[in-house]
Image 1 (cartoon, protein in one colour):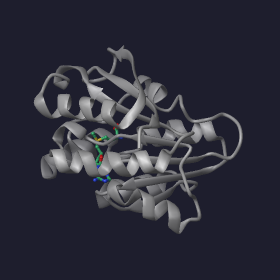
Image 2 (cartoon, helix red, strand yellow):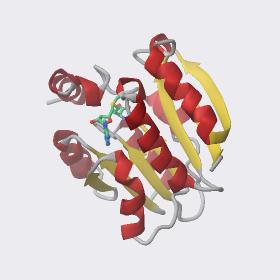
Image 3 (cartoon, helix red, strand yellow):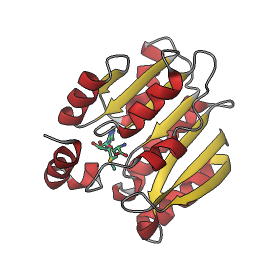
Image 4 (cartoon, protein in one colour):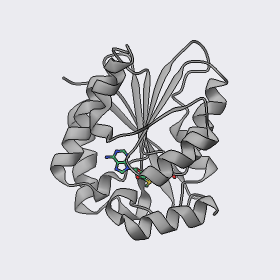
Length: 195
Ligand SMILES: C[S@@+](CC[C@H](N)C(=O)[O-])C[C@H]1O[C@@H](n2cnc3c(N)ncnc32)[C@H](O)[C@@H]1O
C-alpha cells in the first residue's frame, strides 16, 4: 500500500490523532527540518512521524550522526517508519512522555524537537501538556519547529495553539507559506522556553 493510501486509511479510522488526509510534501519537510544541525552529534526528537516524510529529511541531514528518536502513537505508522528507517529509534509512544523517554536514554535535553502533530485537533489541556513537555526537552539551547495549515490558522484551536507558542517561547518566528504543500502550510520556529 502506498504512503498516501495508508495515510488516508488511518485518517478515516483515527481522524482526531492523524488530523490530515495526506502526508506532508518535500518542501514542508525541508523547512521544518532546517534546524537540525549539519555538524556534531545532535539529539533530534520527532513527534508524530506518520508515514515518515520528515523522518527521511532528518535522516538525510544527519547522514549517520547523532540520535534520532521518533514518537508515534499509531502502531501502523510506527511499524512502517521503523521498517523504512532502521537508524531511527521509533517508539510507539505519546508525545507527552517525551521527557521520560529522553531521560531513559541518558539525554538531559534534545537539540531539536520537530513536530508533525495535529495541534489544531487537540483540546486545550492536551496542547498545554505536550507543549510543556517539548519546552522542558529543548531547554535554553534547543530549537522546536512545528507547522500549521494555512486554511485552518484562524480556527479557535489553531489560534489558541499560536497564543500558547508565544506564552511558552521567547522567540517564535513564522516561516514562508509552502504553497506546494497539500494543503498549503507554514512552519513556526521556536527557541528559548520562558520557564
Ligand atoms: C498530521 S499527521 C503528520 C504526519 C507526518 N509528520 C507528515 O507531516 O506527513 C499527525 C501524526 O501525529 C501522530 N500523533 C497524533 N497524536 C500523537 C501523540 N499524542 N503522540 C505521538 N504521535 C501522535 C499521528 O498518529 C500522525 O502520525
